[in-house]
Length: 511
View 1 (spheres, rainbow, N blue to C red):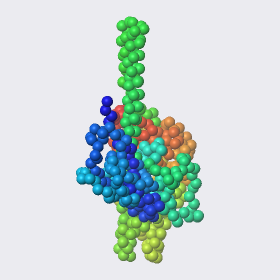
View 2: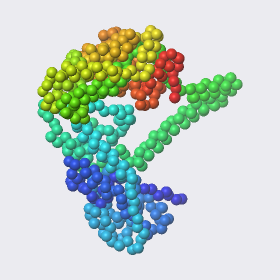
View 3: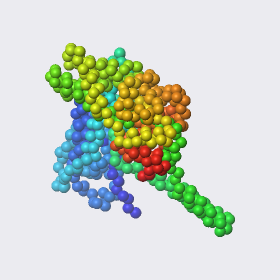
View 4: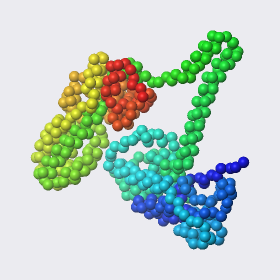
């Protein structure tokens, strides 16, 4: 009998045409604020209509969008005449201010928190665009791949900014201006979706709450419907059998079998998978030992010596060294040089960058670095015990890592792991990085079948995905996240002690 009143679809808009596309200055981040600011606080007035009429007006413009904004660039001028049902009101174009009297009606305001959140999302997206452009010319690692991959199937993937979308194209044009270098050209990629025209109304970044809720509800409904259908089959099946074949045993057996099939879920058995493996592979740095901490402390010792002798700021030295480090490690140490050669080059560049010409100090700096690195080497908790257990179980241990061969060999010996490692393979030795076929070369060289090895590493892309590409069962070692032991394609473990328990007890730890 009654229809429920509905809100308008969520539109991220410039209600009164503020900050049109051609007026936005994309070269400065302030365009984001100008684009969203007029939607944050809006005026409202109590309508003339009775509550009954208002309730039955699902398509009425009686209220401004409270939480339903689709991103517009101000191509249309919104009018408050439709929203309030007021006659003879004049809306000043570009301001949205109502100048006509409201006839004594009660007035108030509406603050839109979702618009504020969208402003923050757009600022974050703009900042990530700038970081990505910088990344092309100043390489750095990007993480949180797990969360990003959840959005890969979305048409409007918030983790991709592409010129195929109109507003993204304007951002990229502003941020990429004068960045390209003919000596270091960008690769061409194929467009995968239709290019948006400038007059299109783009979808809001991150989606809207109403739309996200609707999609989540529909997805949940389909899942519940599927479970109900399967459950119905398993309940109706035995009923049909009991009707068509009326015996006591038929009833008991069919009911029991169907209920067992319905309730028992075959989980992936990691313990059984581990027991079937002959080889256990590990990354080295930040998997078996605290490499970032040790190398950071060693570098700091060098910076302090330079600072004390030449009066340079430790912070300035640290920033410049990080830049040099990123530039010099893009090849993943595949060019065959020794660790001393890499470090000598980096420290020489650091001194040159600060106009220090006394290069006789390089050898002294190398000694300081090596000594500090040795004193700060620290095993990951439980790493040694896991390798000892694998040796007792007659399993083979292979360490596959990126780095200079001499440095990785020295590290394993200093950590006391050498007696428990059967094979050490480095990118420096093979001439390939992990993402460029190192695992395939290892399998071929040592005649290891992919089904006979499991591999653990701390980098999802360079360790896990690269190993999985060659058919290897791989698990991410991440101390900051919860374990994930049920799905072989996304294994994750946060403690070597838990792996130790699985190897010794013969049981998988379930959560």
